[in-house]
Image (cartoon, rainbow, N blue to C red; front, side, top):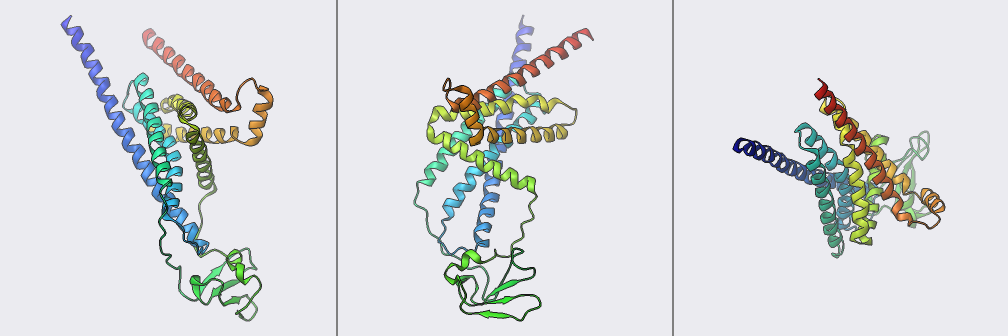
Length: 323
């Protein structure tokens, strides 16, 4: 009897130890993803602001909050993906790992979202603008005739000042006065920063921005709408845990999980389009609020995925007994 009790205690202790390690790994992964993505997104926003030669007194805090909201969406998907992968590799009991990951994700999302909302109420501090480039800044754009460049003689400090237009095959044209001088910022090509980002990364950034807006709207609507929206989304993501067991190579499973999570993100935004919302509204005929449709779809798909995982578990268990 004592030996049986000791065996049960060791099993429970092993489960608790693995669960604690999962909590630590997930928390660190979520925080690192969030902070790293915030920094990268903030730099991207600053570069876009500089490329436009904007003369407005932009607030750094506003751009930082925009970057943080984008990074929060990335951390939701990335954190769940890494957490599920870790749970499978370390053989954490699924019935404890999945609720743990789901609760941590919702808790981190709500807490960081509220913190961002609080910081947005702080009056943004103005910062002095550091002009980009000296007098003689050269700008070019493929939209203009091929090879045509503008030389701002007074630099970005006064982009509406005098300039020189250089066109291939033609003499240099000095323009002290020119049409649209008061609106010169609209006609100027961007500053010479390269933008060679692949399309699939740009589309991912756009979809994450749209997802961040959805999370923000649900959070502003109240705690219950946020819990319904975020809870069903995380429930669907966690139900894809079976993908992490498809092969014997964890890295390959992680790559397949990335593709599946990308599909969930695209599917969510597709259901949120005005056209699909109109389709849902016409189909339901006021029998159910339209805002419930997407969470119900997420729940249904998640339940099917969990049912598939359970059936696979039963089949493997029976085969082990038969062997």
